[in-house]
Image: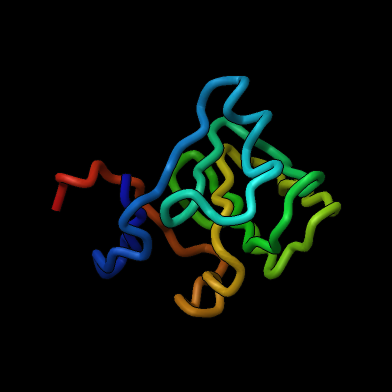
Length: 117
């Protein structure tokens, strides 16, 4: 999948991986030393932890419609991020992603198949 800023169509992440099964959501990024692809979309999800992770990440909580509800920058291992009311999915991205792309609460992100324009 790819992650796209809805307002401009800009591709923010070209190789977004997904965790939709119970096992994949539970495992997440635990034990990994680097991010798989461009980042990880965990869905459904309401909160995350970084226990047993080996790298800091940026965390983006999304509503069902892809609206950014909450941004957590540079979340280090052994932390918990609680989701705001209405969160349906979580993006776990490389540390610095939020700052690099200037993401703000309220904007909408879309997940598209790689083949989609």
